[in-house]
Length: 178
Image 1 (cartoon, helix red, strand yellow):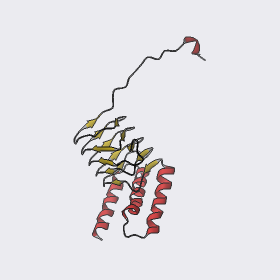
Image 2 (cartoon, rainbow, N blue to C red):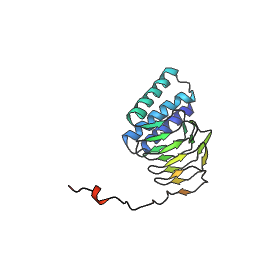
Image 3 (cartoon, helix red, strand yellow):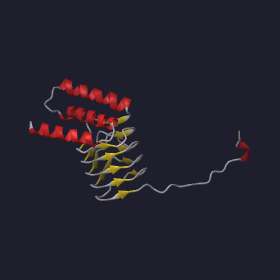
Image 4 (tube, rainbow, N blue to C red):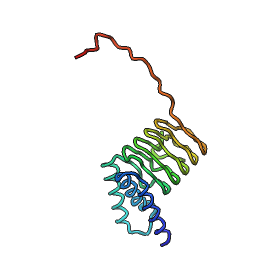
């Protein structure tokens, strides 16, 4: 009983940390649906209803795909709940921050065999962590637009490559000015 109350308090504090109503709803529905995977002594039809609500609102309405089987520690914050994908084979630590248009999951396999993200990891806009056997350490910040496909040790920053700018050449007769 004490664990349930503690878990409920952590979930409520986690919901308060999320910035917008949409993010709060996504995290709440994910946490309720994840009860189904934990096989808590709550009746099966109730947790199944949470999974259905999670699928309908988070995936179909908001475009946020987080499997209820994914294990994410408390302190999960989604800054903009839009186009976020987290694969079900991932194990994610506490205080995970993610922004819009991010992907976390397997590269070649449908479910990664070893995919661990440590505590206090933050992902910038449009960043990806892809791999079937990958481990991201604690206190890692992944910058906007970065694509991570290798292991990252603790206390590192990952910065996207500088953009390659090339002059566009086109024929002058193809350009029309109205």
